[in-house]
Every structure is written in C-alpha cells, then in structure tokens.
Length: 461
Image (cartoon, rainbow, N blue to C red):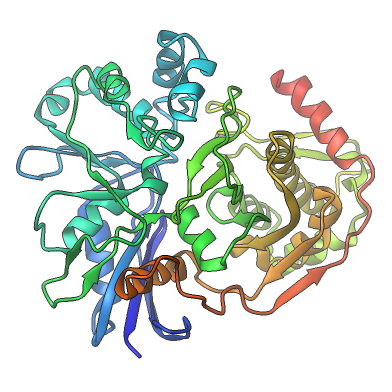
C-alpha cells in the first residue's frame, strides 16, 4: 500500500511519522528541535522539517502538516516574512485583545461573530499589537498566515497561493466556524486594513504537490490533528498535557461562549472542536521537579507519598502567566503554607493537583455548554506521569483512559494525507488510539473546591 507522512510542527519540535495509508501503521519516524521562545522566524521551522525529513520521505505519496495554532506569520507581497512569527504563547497582545473586545461591543459580540473572544493567543490580537507597536514592519505586510499554512506553502515549493483549513482558521479570530467565512471587517479593525488570507480548503482536498510529486493535503491545527489521530468521536474528551494544557471534544454543533473560556473551534473533518486551553501543563511538573532537585520519576514518588489535598498546600501554577483564566501577567503561587505541611511530598502533590484542577475547570466549562463527555482520554508528555494518572480521575470526576503513547498530532496529519490521497468521503479507518489503560478513580475530596477558593481570593476569578 502507499505511504503517507504527517508532520507535527509544534512549539518545541518538528515530528514526522510515515505510515501505511491503509491502516496507519507507523513504518518510520523522526524529529528535530525548534528554538525556544515566544517568537521564532519561520525559517527555523523549515530547517527543522528538512532535518527531520532527511532520508525519511522516500516513497511517500501524500503529506500534511498539523501545526501549532494561532501563530502570526506576516508576509510581504513576495511571500517574504516581515518579522519573526509571534507564537500562541506570546502574551504581549493581552491589552490589544481587551481593546478589540471593547471596540466591538464586548465579548458576546465577538462570540456571535466568530465563535471566539479575543485573547492574547489569538492571531487577531497579535495583529493589533503588531500594527500598533511595529508600524514600519506592519506597513510592509500584505498577507498573514498561520504556522501550518506557511509550512504547507513551503512544501509546495511556494507554488500557487497559500491555503489553510477550517480547523486552524477557526483559531484566528477573523474566521467563523459557524458561518465558514472570513470576517474581513474584523481583520481590518485589528490591523487597520485588510490583509490577504489563505483560501480555506475542504477537509480532504488536494491543495498541491511537493516537488517530488507527493499529494499535499490541507493540514490543520495541532489540536485538530490530535483529534483526527485519536479517532475522536462525540462523547470523547481529550486532556492533553504538553507545553500547554488543552481540553477538547468533538461536537456536532458549533459552540459559542461569551465568557471566552471555551474556544469555538472547527475540527478537521467538518464537525466542531470546542476547546479550553491553559498555558501551564507538563512544564509545571518539570519545573517543580527541578526545584525539588529530582527527576520526573522522583516527583511522581514524592506526590504519591502525599495525601489528597497536599496537607492544605495549594499551587496556582501560573508560571508563564495564564490564558484560562485570563491572567497573562500572573505568576505562580503557593498558598496555605504552614510548618507542618511544607514538605517535598506536599509540594509535589500540590503541583500535580494544581495543574489538573485548572484543566478540570476546563472540562466543566465544556459540559456546562452542552458538550457531551462520557470519558476523558489523557495524552501528551504529562500523561506519562504516574502521579498524574493516579490523581486525574478523582480531580476530573470522570472516567479516564490513557491511550498508548504516540505522536497523535502527526498521526492525524498523516491520516488526513491518506484521506486526500484516497479521495473518499470520510477519513480511512485506522487503528487509532492503540490499547487504552483505564485509570481507577482515587477520591479527591475538597481538592477542586479549595483550589477555586484560593484562585478567587488571589485573583478575583
């Protein structure tokens, strides 16, 4: 059978899997790192893709990219990048987001217009910041792309006009999943004039060919890629613990949340993917392990040696500011410290519980808005933590399963590539998700309530 390739161009690295197009079996894979930071020149992504794909793509018949969402790639009339891309985790546009929300009449007006409320992460807010703070560079910009759009265009040898997909476009703040249309008036409001935007391709459309002749599929955002790689169906929710923490679920209908907690995204198949995102996830664990002078396994052992509630110690894990709740300038903090509870074990437990409580609030936000959730799939680097697995079901108050570790974003991109190659009405049925480990729920009485009380006292939200 033909081979297909999926690329996950994330914040931290480029990961590529080559799969059998018929059943998704991974036959080879590779990765290369990205530079750290919240702004990166797109050439660094391309260099990592070239490094990871060297000698890997022989015989590949189709390829697709799933990339980090929201990033702003501003280009001139020749397609040249006019400044380093601002990434999703760059929070300098928080003030611009607030200004945009107020100018249109408040969060509800934005939710009705594009199913999302401006936040620092969304591209529309970054464009406002760019126009206001770097007017000379902004004057050279004639178009804007997302990271996956730019890489898809590069894969084609820059042939033709850039394209995007409905999933990633729904995270810009100027394309609506409900109406499937760009809101160029909002783009003009943000930037001062209308920029060229990529055409939104159909989910399985062939959008071009590589110089070697492989079919290029539209690609999508990383969360949409993960949903496709996991074979997500209504009733499944994913809690993904990577650089950021995300909670998302497939929905048959669009979701509009005027509070801005739930992002009203589209998915990569024609359905919808309501999502809640936090800035702080697995790195909370690694940072705490470093503070305690241990490694991830040592942190797990310490956390599991403490009881639920960490002896009254509560961590608000806003180490990089926070997106949900919207506290871009916040710092992490510890509360309830007393001589008797200031132990390494309690601190480790508080880090695990604090990270999970923020995401549990996100899960509740989905169900409060009518999104059905029958079980939670725990994925990402943080899902490898024994302490996270032990604590998750009790904090989330839902059945939890852990799929086999895999590069699900890259697998989703590969599955989309196979779909475009086949030209069928639905994606191929792959053995997605692998064997799942069910997680027993350990009681966590009062943990979420205490976390919420501390958050309200400290930040008023």
